[in-house]
Image 1: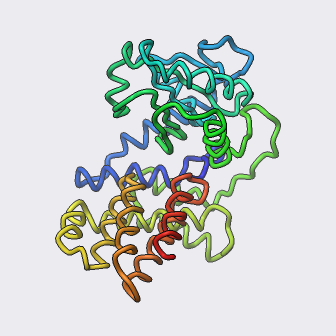
Image 2 (image 1 turned 135 degrees about the horizontal axis):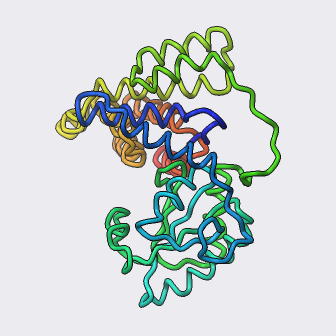
Length: 320
């Protein structure tokens, strides 16, 4: 996913939150957008994580997290740097193998990511909310969303690769507080972002199109437009698109509508997998139509999201 631009809300995230509410409740509810924006605002004013802080202490590169501190140390913090959740328990032998490895990698990271340790026995509500089925479980959070995970103890080299890919896909290794060239604000985006805040996707689409008419290669408006168009398609498809697609597995249009709805409501992997299944079992024009739509969805999510890389590899396997 695209990192949030400093000082601006993430247009994809805002559209997604508004769209999820519209699809599920039949009317745009901006409560989720408001909560997300508030979390981002808190992250902007909070001090960056410090590798020098004592292990386990709030604000450090390695923190012990409880249900009471999860909002600040995981969700809010994930708007600064990626947060890796280490879900463990005292009785878990494999946890005692993996946790020291993750702690060492977090210290080496120097604040470029945070390791948040959660004792599942002491925090059962968190374990349930995160759908933990076994431990050790590791889940990566970026801008308030789970974006990658693995289960079980893995070798240090694999853990290092997991973290390195996570950092590359999110911040590129930047550490909050480091000097960076200031990013110029583009006032032409204000109308689109205001439309997203009030849940008006049609107005946001028109505003982004106006920007692109003036500057076809605008670095932000292009992907934002693709994302808003996706959420409009998801709204038009509605929840019934899933049942319709399941009832007509050979109807490619029905499958693409279902994939749009899944992606628009945050089920990224399920959206990709639905089209991958179509590609695996079809040929000719039908396969090509499904492939083109899947590639379009890759562009909506963005190559920085690790799930896009995994789906691209699966697509290559399915085609060849």
